[in-house]
Length: 320
Ligand code: PMV
Image 1: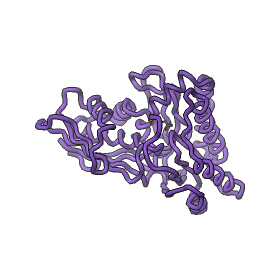
Image 2: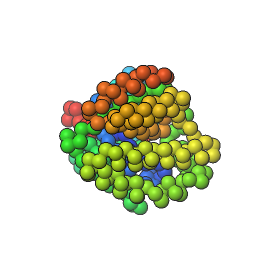
Image 3: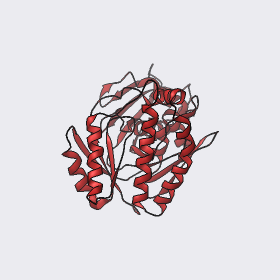
C-alpha cells in the first residue's frame, strides 16, 4: 500500500484566474501551460490500516497547514473510508511562493495515492482528481505544452505540443522565499467579487487562448511572447484592482521585468510571466538561455536563478 510519484511544476502562459464552481474547483477560464523538466516534487503515499491519522512530512518536517488539503485530495482519489496515510513530499525548489509548488505536489500526490490504493485510473481521471485539489495541478499530468479547457461540467486537459519539437527553456528568478500573502483560492474569490476588471478578464480569455494555441502550433515565438506577457499583466491588473488589492510583486520582480525588456531590445528571444508570487519566469529559446540566466542572476534582489527545459508528465517512481 505504498507508492511514490514524481511531478514537475507547470508554468501558465495563458493564466487560470477565477473559479466558476468553488465546490468542484472548476476554473472559470481555460489556460495553457508548459510543464517543466528540472524542477520537481516527489511524493510517497503509504496507506496503513494501523495508522490513526494522516501525517504529512514536507522536506522531512511535519507540515500541518497543508495537511487538510492533502487529506482531502486522498479522500477524493481513494475514498473517504480509506486507511490513513503517511505522505512524504520533497521538492527541489521553494514551495508556496508562486512557483507552482501546489501543482506538482497535488499531481504527484494524486498519482501516488491512486497507485498505493491499487486503483487503475487513466490520465484524464487523474487530471480531474488533481484539479479538484488545485486547478493548475491538472496540467502537470501532461507533458510539454498543455491546454486545459473548461466546460460548465468538468475540465478537459491535453498536451498540444511535445517538448522535443519546440524545446523552449524557462529561467526562474527567485526574488523572495516564503509563503505567499494570500492563497490563490481566496485571492481568486476576492477578484471575482470585487475587481472591476474581472468580467473583461473572463470575456477576453478565449481570444488569448486562440492566439497562443496558433502561436504554439506555428512555433511563432514573437506572437507567443506578446500574448503571454499581455495575459499575465492583465491577470495582475485584475488582482491590483481588487479590494483589498493583491500585489504579489516586489521591487526585484519589477527589475527582472525590466531586465527581460532590455534582453528583448538586445535581440534575445525571451518573455516574462509571473504567477501569484514574486518570482519571475523568463521563457526563452535555447540559444538565449545563458544570456537570460546571466542577466537575471545579475539583477539586484534576485536570490537564485533556476533553469529548466520543458518536460514530463507526472509519473510513478516505484509502482506497488
Ligand atoms: O492551481 P492554483 O489554485 O494554485 O492557481 C494557480 C493560479 C496561477 O498560478 C496564478 C495561474 C495558473 O494558471 O497557474
